[in-house]
Amino acid sequence: MRYNAHRLLHQAANQPCFRCELVITDAQKKKLQTAQKLVRNALRVGLRLAGSYLTRDEIPLVKSYGVPDPTALSFRPKFRTQGSWAYGTLNQPARSCQQLDLDDGMYVPMSIVGLNPAVASSTLFAIVERILGTVCEAQGWALDTSKSICVRVVLDDEAHLDLNIYAIPDVKMVLLEKAMHAASNRAMDAAFASPLREIRLDPSEIYVAHRTTGWEQSDPLELEDWFVNAAARHAGWTDLKRLTRYLKAWRDHHWDSCRLSSLVLMVCAVEALDEANTPPKPGRDDDGLLIVARALAAKIAGVVWNPVVDDKALNDNWTTTEQNQFELKARALATELDGALNHETSIFNVVARFRKLFGPRVPDNAALVSPITSANQVRSFAAAQSPSPRVGSQTSG
Image 1: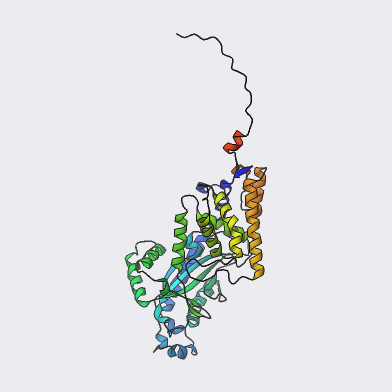
Image 2: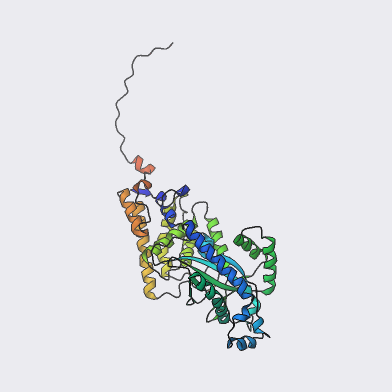
């Protein structure tokens, strides 16, 4: 028997379904946005006096980079939300040891990079962390400096904020500031996204700070555009954002933490949909998820390439053991989904299989699953003999 389990995954108007269980609460959203605002404001104020945060040992080092008076070092950053919050794929954590994550990007002038950077990435990280250390102490937060390309502010056991530092050409910073001022009547992040595109930044003009390697080319907006365009390309038959959220929820149900990143899952989902011989059935999240799941294991077993950076693998940091574990889990995902949707004998078993794959956040409600009776199945039944109707005498008039 075949089944339609779409309503188990998604229903409109916030009716009970798996997707609804993945949505963060208004209180959680407010907590993250409040923290983001405090962090941004602290950095806007602090970086105008960046030189005052240098230590005695750092001042001659920065001076050797060509800065006449390091203590007068000052710049005005710009910010933009990125990552799952910007994509609309942020999930409620599946386990208590997992955290909500808001990714923020801070943009500073390229003059601090250059061939002989005015401020080395490690020094800039130090300045930012000293500024945020004061905020963390006041708010009861914790600063995590272990990440290679971000500063993490841990709000509590439930949530953290990650800050990446980007450098763009000084002239583009000036144009960006003017464009943002002209768009100031719009929402903060929406106002930033459009000007970034309007000033025509080349991806090669954007660098992200790395603690040990200095600066690396990285354009978060290019990646976001790639995902938005992919979602639009498949919008006629499936919702890529929802499929991505289901995959992330599947991962989070099976691992406390792992290096199977959200970006890898996004790329695999897009490639699977692009390569599918037949697109998912419209209005069937379960069918779209099955198409992606069938392709996932093979993609994980190979090299997953960054879709916007040439020759950059996204899974080259996996051990062989990790890659094998991810592949085996992905094969189980495809097998269980296929069994649930195409070979089960009971709607109750369909629900049980989905809950096995994605956890107790999937509603334990068999009424959300519908058997599919195909035209061929209907024609396979022998025609039953029906008695002739008894017709009495009739008159017209």
